[in-house]
Length: 121
Image 1 (tube, rainbow, N blue to C red):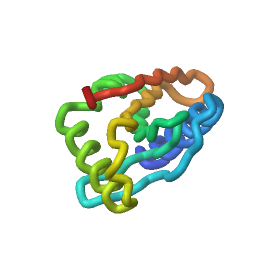
Image 2 (cartoon, one colour):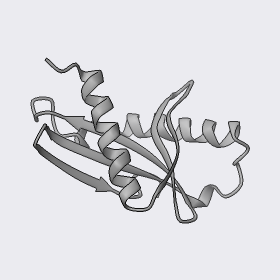
Image 3 (cartoon, rainbow, N blue to C red):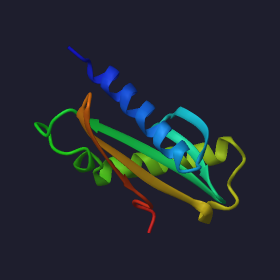
Image 4 (tube, rainbow, N blue to C red):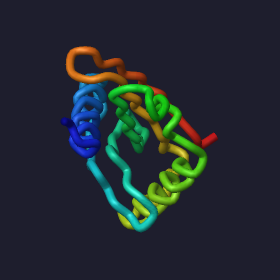
């Protein structure tokens, strides 16, 4: 039986390979702040991209996209603010975005949905 942590770790590995194939440069993974965690932080051209990865084996508890609630988004934004502050990156906040990578399925039957620019508008 696969634990949810192992499934999540696999999802992050799949997401990292996917965004790397798109030319993103991964800067950090699993950044933890007092408000939460950012799964992947990457550069896409001039944009700093904070990526939330959600993986579901089945839809018993909803789709991965449905797991990104307004409350979850608020925690992500607070964690981004903390990341920017702690890394001296307060300038240029207009060049950041939040992407979600939603992964469904398991083993040989995986689908991936990359949603760009979530929640900052």
